[in-house]
Length: 234
Image (tube, rainbow, N blue to C red):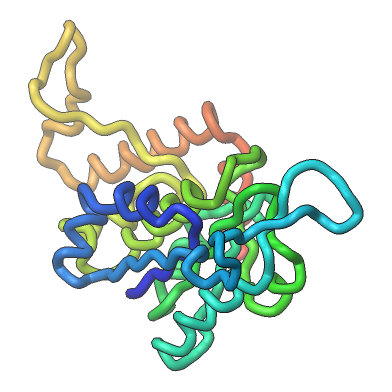
């Protein structure tokens, strides 16, 4: 799978995605991550990519031309117009189901805004998806882009060492993940639940399901309602 990230700060993105599971996936050629510096496509001799907004107001707006030309550079190389995601608080909130959907794509373009946003005309021209990572405002789209790359990459076959990991985590079936334990068996006077030491996999699975339901009810009751609706629809 190929990620093309259009950004004003390519080093921030590339350095943030070069380690751990994602970094190893890149080394194994399971995923490809490429940053495209939007400043390289401005026609302004001072590498300026923003200007004052029409109608007045605070801040600056990224201009359409360099964004469009940066996007076109990817389209020309891959031979088609990939699904293009604009990271913005105005989009629907990113969910695990969206990560699974995007992971089916061969190529994805992630567009990182900055300043007060991007000229609406180029967004209308190239963007297929508007995505937010939460109801708050960041200084740019780079951090949200890294969040999407991380979450989507985990759904790509081979990226996780244990294939089951991607299907037993939080938000599967709209439930939070059950509690996890490791060695030692007793730590600070707290013992690992006996059921996990029993070797009875059916009972362990049953316990984990119960714990997922309990934890979701306590911490995210909104998800529990979604889970019930999903079960009723099946």
